[in-house]
Length: 199
Image 1 (cartoon, one colour):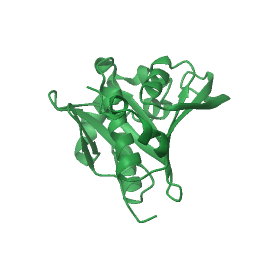
Image 2 (image 1 turned 90 degrees about the horizontal axis):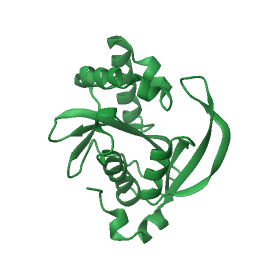
Image 3 (image 1 turned 180 degrees about the vertical axis):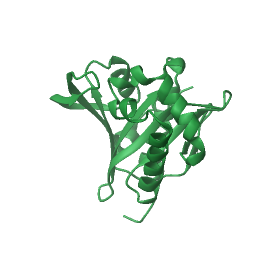
Image 4 (image 1 turned 30 degrees about the vertical axis):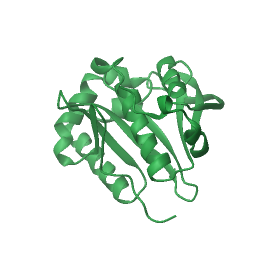
């Protein structure tokens, strides 16, 4: 496949998703710090790992390196009206020969239940499946995370199966993990209501 890459910025009606740079260290530190316990179950590497300014800077450097190497694309999610960082969407586990990718995402607790997660994830899916001609995107969700499962279903993703006791969360518990995916052919068959960016 030609060396295409994800755009550095994706703009929706209410959000701007853009790649991190070193100037975002304070915003990232504040987002992680104010959501540490919220992230512990699903993103223990963020909750436990970004506790000092040096660790945040190292995280951002890693994001830039992965981006430049086409190994991963980590978007910060900014709300246009608030002008602050409210979450993150990451494109990872890339297989360019297919091409396919995994998506992971979170929205800060103060901004939940406002449609920001579906708006940001739908925008990244549209870039992958429509603009970059990816054949498949998928998510892995612990089975107890009902809100994320409902989001995957809302975006038209199909349940592929469940891996038992696959993930150990930040509390030390083992969880079953459900896999949901959307292929380019299924995406093309979606109705306009399903494919348009959620409001």
